[in-house]
Length: 269
DNA sequence: TCCTTATGTACAA
DNA sequence: TGTACCTAAGGAC
Image (cartoon, rainbow, N blue to C red; front, side):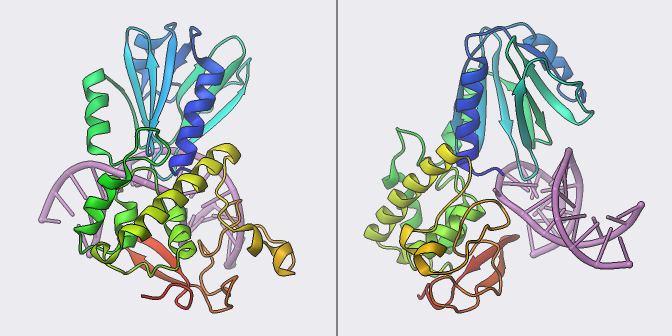
């Protein structure tokens, strides 16, 4: 599930369910038990997101830094919480709600300066109001690395993952193998603005949809479809299937240990 | 029941 | 570039 939109949505949902309340904190699985004991009974003040990093602020104690990695999952539910399964790393409970965290890459108690250091090493996040697209373009325009790799580099732009990368490059007709330095300022501005809109919609709907209204199955006179991951997309995980626009088979390749998807006809150099 | 795969990252060599 | 880490779902048997 986790690209930046998921994490910003989680920040909102944690705020809605737990902010300003005293929270019972536990680690049924045990790996976060010491910190959970310190946090138990304290007040959750706020939740913050930057890229794929989630921060839960506990009054007087510090921040819980969470990164879901590839497998991490979060489950919300109404109180009372059911008995936890033995994979629950972190559980929060108050009078009205509970939330379980499973399989995160990171779940750690950190200080303000440690949190700041994480912000400092991340690039601008299209979902944060203070984000500066110019800072991202400075890096992109000086790099011989492919634009596909740069979009996944969290130091360049924070929050974009494998789905948004594939989809935004398709929406702009950009070959994923083009070097960053060949991306024009106008192209970058369009990509950034598009990501901002797509990711905001992703936060709202808690899923990734990238297909323009004029390209929906209804608009194209085709049978309805649902892609594997739950949203409507152009190319992500559609290897060898016909491009929704031109019918050419969608191509896939390994790029930095991830699957890249693109339409070679719609995305020319 | 086993195998593969996944919207991610860090570190070693 | 390869590997380790973490979990769960889906498909092949």
